[in-house]
Length: 381
Image (tube, rainbow, N blue to C red):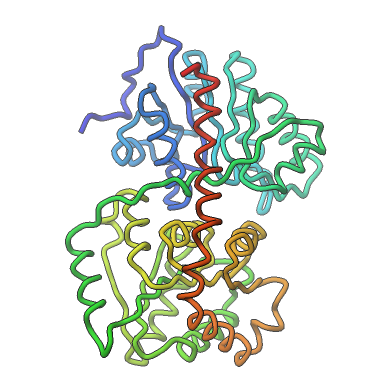
């Protein structure tokens, strides 16, 4: 494997496609977007701005540079023919203005360097502060083509008098990879064990104010009561630093009651497409993270959504899948019997849910495939 992090780019050529997003932070959803994007740009000279360029380079076999060395990033713009901003939710000030300022700065660099800019399947917002709104609207004005993944983002663009195109999250078009033999063996073993076989249930949780310690303790007990004896939990750690603690807490409670867990080496899944293959082998997914739900639905696996963000609720409604809004539906979440009933009923209806997935999934994949057309149009391919 060549070392893609060394400066091996022809400094005199202007033929690079520079890619920016929330890459190299260990967030599976964003890495999945990057995997799709790399496959769509495979005939181009790609450079990815990453928090962990060595990891990004080795995983996706592309050139990668540190996103934080801005002087070197600006030099890269001088050799760039297309700047791809996204996908994902880059322009938002949920926790601070830093994200909006950083990505706006990249748009300004592209503008100064005379580089064409494609905003790639982004979800804009939430934008709470006037400065965040101003910088985002200005960055969008500096773009040659804008694609967004949800109607709310499209409305935001139109309110600013800008033209955008509604596509879909690129991960809908991700193809499953090959699973390591050890994980295949574990899946087969658990599928065959038990009377009549086990039900493999993926669980995705993350740190969030809506899942505080009290809520997590309540959820652990509800989950144990709602799921049948032959349920096997499969922890889905999609971002290690945010997901490990709540998932470990649930697993400790679960195994303490003698219930089964399918444990696997997450590090052996090098690419998001392998995670997609794993999730596709499950029977059901209970998930907070958007991309745990997108990957499950994309593989035809029914889900129960724990919505901490409007983007999660939107997908659940589009696919007609049961969900609980962790912020607006606190009364239900804090009623143990009501929550237990919701989960039990959702699990009982999972076969009916599978039948209803085909039409919205076809539509999501078709919309996601539109993203590549905007790349082709700008590059003249």
